[in-house]
Amino acid sequence: MATATSVAATLLLSLLLARARGGDDYFGFVYAGCSQGRYDSGSPYASGVESVLTSVANSAPYSPYGNFTSPSPSSSSVVGLYQCRSDLPAAVCSGCVRSAISRLSSLCAWAAGGAVQLRTCFVRYGNDTFLGKQDTTVLFKKCGGSPGDASGAAMRDSALGALVAAAAPAGGGYRAGGSGGVQAMSQCVGDLDAKACSDCVSAASGQLKSGCGYATAGEVYLGKCYARFWANGGGFSSGAAGSNGYRFGPIVYGEHGGRLVVAVAGGFFTCMAYFTLVLM
Image (cartoon, rainbow, N blue to C red; front, side, top):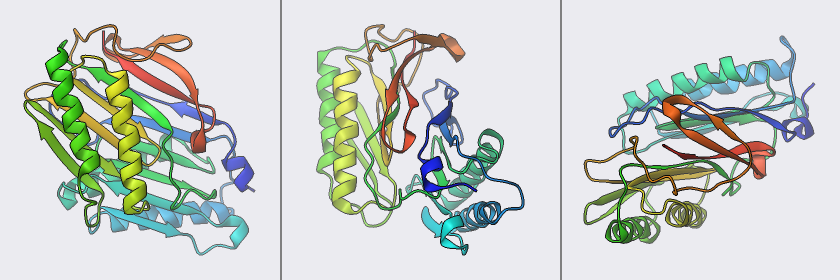
């Protein structure tokens, strides 16, 4: 039977690159993490996972956020949550969540805990105590776009600063800001209170400011929030400045010739690889 210890054990990472484009690919894959701990088919824990993910799928057409706990004995209890980008229509949320659950079923089959981040939604389940807890672990980061300059970076910093300074939104945790020709947005997971959301957005903004150089687009996903910026009419494309992003560890290669640089990240995703992507 899966235990909280096994769920918090080393995670296996499955990561694909979202397509590089200016517009949103609502269901585009960003990252997934699966616990090493497993559960058996037909066990009470299996029933708990099915119950929680069914509740998540059924709730998504009506609300951008929800969390659920299975009605199992405490030793087999499963917690699950989802968060959609809360400025988008309910149909987008529902479709994204169903796609995320399908990814979980294929990538994290029989794993005691798992999480999937798509472009506009996040789904997570497990039997550890992640609900309501802050998590600013960096899980995925990408900088790109055509090379910019110091004035563009200043507008980026101002746009990201507007996200941090924005009043805590009522329900959903979505924020948007802009400065000159640069736009920015962020989304927190709904189990964070207003201050924790602001702290998470501040940490995400700091990552983009310090790590993306003169890139004209970037995004970073932390454990409980994410943030993006882009120049008007821009997006991720080949020709990004090669000096943007961090340089850690071994190099592997993915779609579109993207360079993934690996380091170890902590938090729930203990031993999950941390990726910074610089599109070459």
